[in-house]
Length: 490
Image (tube, rainbow, N blue to C red; front, side):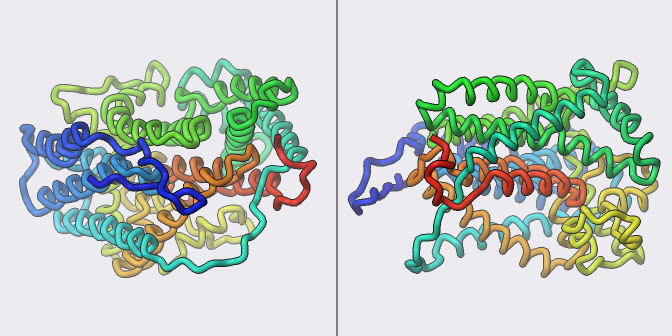
């Protein structure tokens, strides 16, 4: 693989970036992700049928493996694109392939086998469209524009966010009865949230109150920690100030309580970890490569066994591991099956939503008392049609877009998403290299977006929208256009 050269400001060629793996390591990585692992999974014994759906699924796994290898081996840090291909390789590739081999689905697939074939083909179409969009962004002609004032973090407003984070997280902790409950199980947390919000919001508003209490208790704390971490990493003067170090240390403790992996969904903890990692190491290509490569190992070997934190002692079920594929047959990897169920749901007389589901997610803050016809969560909608009361059904982005806009609309949407992802990644690299200032907002926003993309891709959009809205409010609170030198972080 060719080594990309970085160009300095003066136009001269800088030394080759150390981000590119040596050729000696490139070949084993590509062979492992693209060939060895998918073929090893496909060769395992199982009751599954080697039909069209199986071969399509093997193609999806290999294609996503090729693209993930390209992300890891690249000399450029592509955070958003890297997160997309990591999710595709694991959740839309390897895990569904294992389920197809075993002939077992984490969520029942009710429709005919043809719907699974169509779902897998559409997944592949979405991935190819994302790639085409990224390619168009790469070859987009550049026009010289007037340099706009860069957005930066306002020092006084940052302290306001820190105060908000402390207040909101402490409220969450007190409402649930203290920090001890955050180290029990997610089932205990859910029960505590329902009890805390039921008395104030009633049955109809309990779900909204639950989401707001938990969202404000976790998101401001995470963003305040990331912004202060950015300040400390990039400023020696800040590391000597107790007014920066002490609030940061307190936020570390606070996030350990409210954002730990025991009491939070795995994808949310992955968001926090991903964002913190790239905030601490904003310019390290080695850490970027390691995060993507180790992400495969963690998702395959660690994620399935952390399901024990979801329930209390009575409800815990040990993960069966008769074969290497058993841990992949869990609900965290039900995306392709739920996409097939969504296709069957539409064919069963429900039809397409023509933008209603996406609109409901975008207007998540509108209460149902004001908007009586507000669309339900897509996962709940399809789950209700399936006859299940489970609240842990996913609705992957492919299913959301297909249900609203059909196959052509879904493909066009992924084309646009790929284009935007590539543009964001390019802007992130330019800004973090050219602007190493402590108040660089983009250096924090993009790692958060890359981490949260796991939740957006898994779905559903309505469940993911609440924390996005809170995060946007927090970023708007601290951001200002560069101009007031006294308000900048130093």
